[in-house]
Image 1 (cartoon, rainbow, N blue to C red):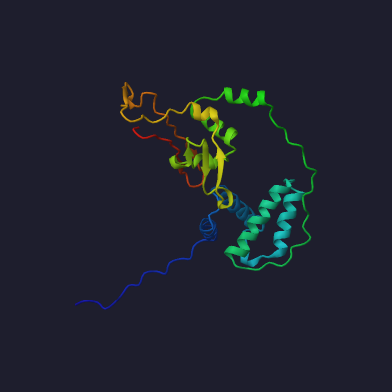
Image 2: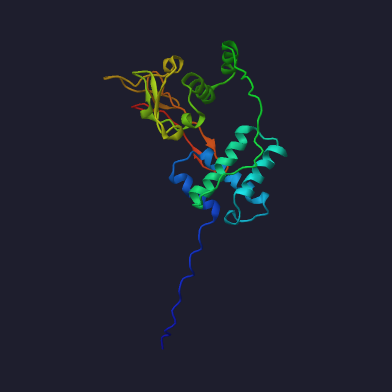
Length: 237
């Protein structure tokens, strides 16, 4: 005799707040560094107010947290602005709450400091002490003006040796731009074999007569523990 009892699956629990924040950040194509910073500031905000849910707080709690950063933590103005931007994103984009004007916040006001810039000799001395992949990365960062993550995300089609330029795709704010390829980097890059040329065989494997120019760069992301790889390869390799 069969039983008519049916078992229903338990209802799926709603996603956690920080998971919702991550989802919104990735939908809007924020960088991984911005995602990590925003998640960290939102977590600090919640812990500062005794693990209260942000839905139970508002403008007063935001002002109190920002004032705490300025008065007790002595953070820089840019750090306080980043924390404020993270909380605005939480309330406006994730919780869909319209905040009123936030006043009574002790703003960080410090006189700007003059930047310390390397001379050409100092920059050359730093580059001279780097070798291998790190030297190539530094040459690209210093000569092309790339950001670190832009360098890590380079692909084969982004490097144009004919025009000596690099196309940066999906940069900051998803803007694309063209950067110059340093002559020093272009000069050490062997070309692919021309028509009729064969790849020369060496003890370490088969590569072009001039040598296969390839490098891999990996960056450890502490949160998701993913490795980002960068490799430039040429036909015949």
